[in-house]
Image (cartoon, rainbow, N blue to C red; front, side, top):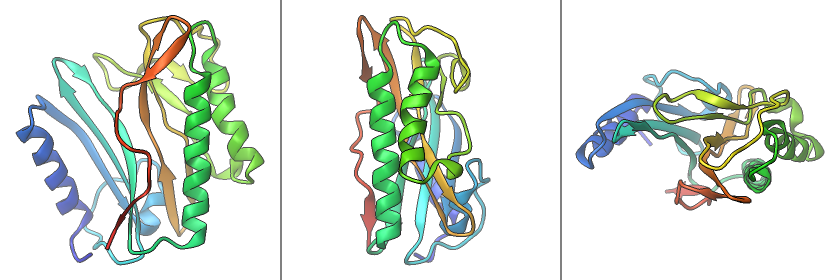
Length: 198
């Protein structure tokens, strides 16, 4: 609490640079009600106890792009935040499970989206489930409800379902998946727990 979104973003960007990133492509720090905007531009809002904070980072190493989103809560999260977080996490897990060689991209989107719809949160999931990345931060395959792309070994893409409650908060959990023969692997390697500070 007491620091701005921009200060947090600068600290994260500096950490990535100090640890070998060739470039930090973007840092989104969306706190409190700003988290309800999936592509919020990091600003000067002061973080407050009780904020849910969406942090989305993209960096480059070896010419290849990375992208990750995790969520931090300042203070003890209320039941509503925890429930949304657990629903988004399960949607993320189901999307990752569906990301197997031979499946279509729309099946990954459907696995995540249908779970959020069943949880009564479908109206708050307002973007595609994922995008490819490699030499570009956003490239095919597009993980959308209409994409007929068949997943093949070597494809790399995000699985990033999100729920955005207007005027309150947002939750997005993003992992990067690589498809291998018959299955997929999560390249992200970070814990999926809601990060609670303070």
